[in-house]
Length: 479
Image (tube, rainbow, N blue to C red; front, side, top):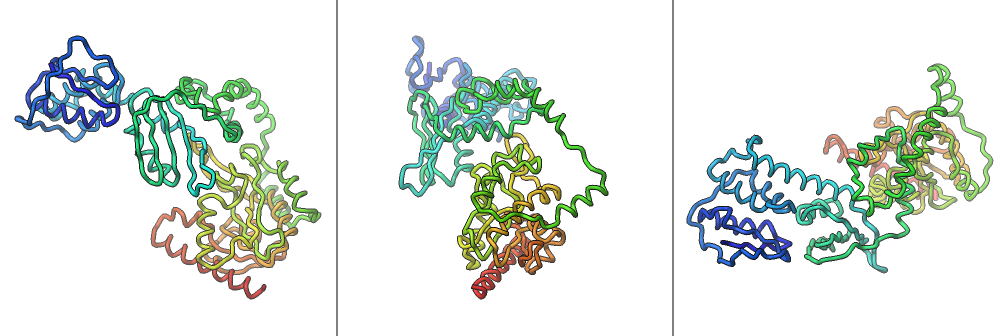
């Protein structure tokens, strides 16, 4: 009788090495006991040393190592033994794994499916809490998760790729996975459940409650995707019973208050009227920001987390106007902090444009999005929504009184000049704005992030950099 002791980390590597040697000596499965460390030792097992050398060549099909690795992560009884029996069989029958009618292949695929499902749940339900040490220049996050199977080694690569720009720790009852300064380490440490509640939970719950769409509620499908066993580690789970209970009433309210569309001709007349420059009392920035928080001039105020006003010097000579807040801006309540804003900052720095001296804002103040799965996908604001938000944009222009405005993309150009068409031809030109301020038109940075063609994207990036350099030169001359 052979006993193979398997460590908590590196389980598959040890199993693979032992299985190769045992299979090479034709050791039958019933003479092997696969033993995880810290498990109770069988009274009937022996400690016979494993055979030396590899007298028989053992070959396996390409798909077998991945399947065996997943079987070694399973907590199902007999999973190691099943992997070994399949190893012996695929050596003689290379196409065995394609035969789903085979009982052992079918059971192995079933166990592997459970592993993949467990990994999917871990990707979806890990909730990081910030734990950045004071004075650190790199943000750090910590999370607690309780997987059903031993998947920590299989899933670590996903989190490394997904969150490679920060330090993080994921603690499970058996393994602590740490990513610090670009280096991944794992330790088999037994831990009790961590209490990670903090003030960010309220922000997250606010966000979840705002993206919850009662009209699309399917309770069984939701509980299938988000099983109740994970709820104890999910801050938003406390809201779910209440949101479900209120869903029917909210849908009735949504149906009763749904807007009716005006006839096409009437809509065109309304558009022209709304594009006219509104007469606005100047007031103060504080009054404007206070009033902006309660804005409900269009339906975008409903699903968005919060309104995102402009920021920067209140008497800036230059104003930068983007399209609308993105996902990150919506959560933080600040403009130009997402990927497109970071791209703009980089190009402005390379062009010699002092970004901090400019007042930055968006043509539309609420985030418009479509929910796809767990993601909020950006959706372009309609002409009606742009028109409604012009009231606020004109208010900002009246308060800042800039010498020049840079319009980033079609939405900003439409809000500032009344025309959002032909941006590629208009990029790099100066037009008279509806508010009487010169408007320099260029492309929006988001168009440079994911261009359909790399060469075109590189050319457009150079063009925008050149436009910003030209703006910087003009502002220097006007100073």
